[in-house]
Image 1 (tube, helix red, strand yellow):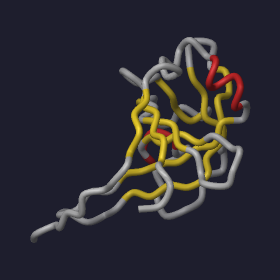
Image 2 (image 1 turned 45 degrees about the vertical axis):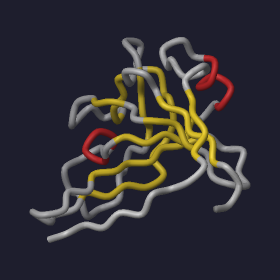
Image 3 (image 1 turned 120 degrees about the horizontal axis):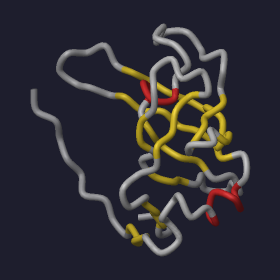
Length: 127
């Protein structure tokens, strides 16, 4: 295995959504950081952070909001929603616009919740 990866998780998830609010809101899943990058990212579902229901087109409004004041939390980086009936993939990745605010925000109960990942267990999907 490579260097240890540090993974942080949100205890119960914070409510987030696209600024357009076409698809409503959903849950912030977890924080991630790319190796070699100072940026802080978050994972949610594509149907939560996308600004429209045309899944094959890029989003127009990339702002992700959170909280009752609808403050801009970050922007969309990538996303995917599968159309396969057997394997469901629904993932959206956003980048925090202010890393310091994200880590210090009391809405995101995250500063003490973490675990070290030291190895991965391979698994197979049977169909």
